[in-house]
Image: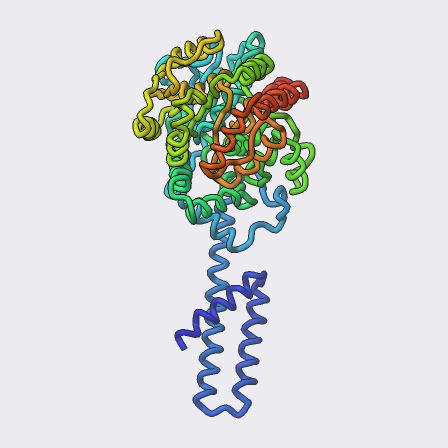
Length: 564
């Protein structure tokens, strides 16, 4: 008897899950009792009749309990979303709302990420200060922070038209794109003030919630990269599951962290490089929100209702339209690239072609992402290049960024092969290094290790050194869209596979090299007589540049200026 109870419960939960209301419950109870009486009247002995009656009673009880639980879940979900500014359901083509299992997942996710957090309805007082990294850029901070003044977009004391570039440091990608957008906006500093608004830069309980979420993502990325196998497959599946429920969960977080944005003027154009920032802005009531879609895999998670969603490639644009995103909320813009890199694109490609045809050593830039994943793969790749480094065929530029564990791994890999290396650990040192190479000099040693204590040079180094490298060896992240010949190495999340495909089809990058042997084969191809692959990639970059493929950030800022 006891063993049959969960079976009855499961059947009834499934039956109700498909969409029964109170009338359906009454019908089910009637059906159970009727059929129990029919079975009992078929000449069964007394014991069998008792069993049938008890089974029927258990089924009725399970059905009533199930209905009660469903009502509780629905009530809890309605309470969670009742104050939301935006109704996500019709936007994701689900006007009747999420299914029961989705509601349970969303309630659990909300509890996991924000359980116990007191949702505040008032804006956090904001200040602004001059950026120490980009001249002319204003940085949003908490009011009262050292060297800050009250934020002009809160006080109303504006002397120029504003543009806010909103971001979150979750890995390096979102910040890298934000700085790229700022580089184009600062071109108009005579009539425009550009604000760098990182939600994590404002010390608050809301920022702490986001930081905790980022830690979980970074840990997942590292584990997937290091362990591989089933863990990598699971993480890959998770990163591909950015459906309607992922958007709902992220929007719910956006509602919670509104105090980080709601103190700014609502008509200010906001260029968001993370969907959470765009969702938060829309929830706050901002009317000019631009969401820079980050990769090349169409998911509900990466687009934002009430914003203008700009995408980097035509495949993503078509797939998002196919999903149901409104044409007026979607536009093809181009890749998210810094101004300096775009404006010097032809000269940099010509310099690479000259080096390739002269059979100069292949300069290979290997950066690590903000999550610090890929340690195992990159360390093994370095060791596998030992002979080519010794023979003068390859020069390595290793950017450990601000990750101490990656610096240690790089150093160990180099020591294992007995390779000496030069170290660059200051921002000025990076500029001097690049200027020297542009002047025709070779690096001091075959391997240069970049490692920093500060965050900004850790991000900026990849952008700066990309201009003087021959090949950028990176996972298919935001860097997959860069106008540099690329060796796409093993991805961390499955959503990144589509970015590698975009690079390959444009002719400015390889397909993903998932194994060391694949990466070494591409290096061999780059070093072929006459370097046909490397020359072709540079020529394709120049052609792509002429049709505006890399003008995404430039176009985003122009759109924002039209909104001012």
